[in-house]
Length: 191
Image (spheres, rainbow, N blue to C red):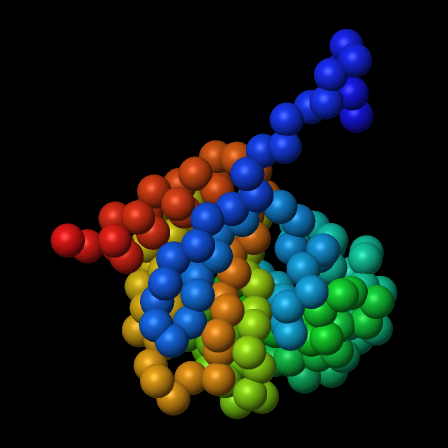
């Protein structure tokens, strides 16, 4: 919308890193808008969808997503299930149990959930997924440590056999976006 008769400048939406054979993108945005094959929900192990990313997915995609997920649970924290995408632009939702009913997470759970989300996408031959920053909302996990764990998991997953060609982090808020970009630059742009 114009301000004082001038167009508001468009801020950059994201940055990309080559992690052959896939592309890792980091965006500042809303994950429910993504049209990737799947988006990933940072879930609890019983898959009820309350606040944060889960609440946004349920609100936009419909309560059938929650019903489908709950029917497959509970699971051990760190495990994943996949459901339809309901009314979302993404065809599927991968529900990664980043925490138990206590709503607490850890580096180990974030690592397991990230690896399992990538493996779930792989098992269904998906080519693109979008992920949030696991455990940094309700779970209160530090964003910088989350970024290190999740980016390292993606780097480890990037083998010639992977069906994935695009992994996208969609982060809510400029601070989380900037932290993920900083960590990715440190971990992926080595000299």
